[in-house]
Amino acid sequence: MTVQQKLQERNMSIYRLAKESHVPYATVNDICNSKAQLEKCTAETIYRIAQVLKVSMEELLAPCFEVRSSFENFKSAICHRLKEQGDIAFLIDTLESNEIRTYYERKWFPECLYLLAMVDYISRENDVPLDSEYDDLRRLRLETPLYPASVRAMAAAANSDIPLRAAESVSIPEFRKFNIIENEVRNVI
Image (tube, rainbow, N blue to C red; front, side, top):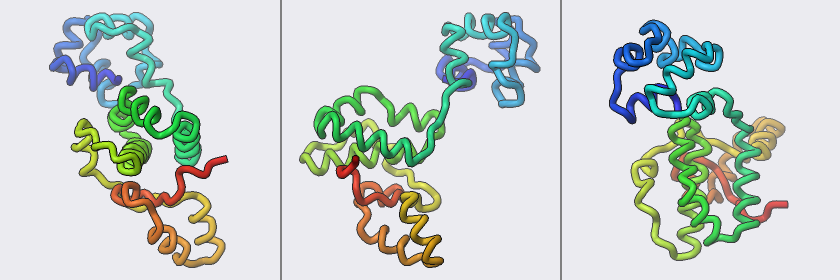
């Protein structure tokens, strides 16, 4: 969780954080507005901010070191997890982990919506009611369609959008709703 998110959670202003932590307002403001990188601050600055926000220094720094894999790798990992766990265990694990909301808070919208689409699809396939926890996210949609790399490659090789349109026509509805073109989530190797 970022400093800004922690401030919002605690209903605290930048000014108050600066005052209580004894860190200059300009420094705290620059951290919160991404003008300064928290991981480049002194240990004392990080410690003081963490103390006021009532989190560990590690928790405060964790978002600075998150590595985002390619979307294709992400999709593959999710499909493999589904295959390994089975439908119901996958649903339970995903919903209990709150991964979907975590991706949303990180502003990793393709990952968030892909995982939500997978949950909705698996729920439909197994006659499981949708979890209303994510109804707010179900109103979202990616601005431009997100096609599998293989489909994009075919379209580029053919210098035509016919492969894109063909993929759209067979896309799983739960994915298509979010502007994600996906037609196969089970046959992974």
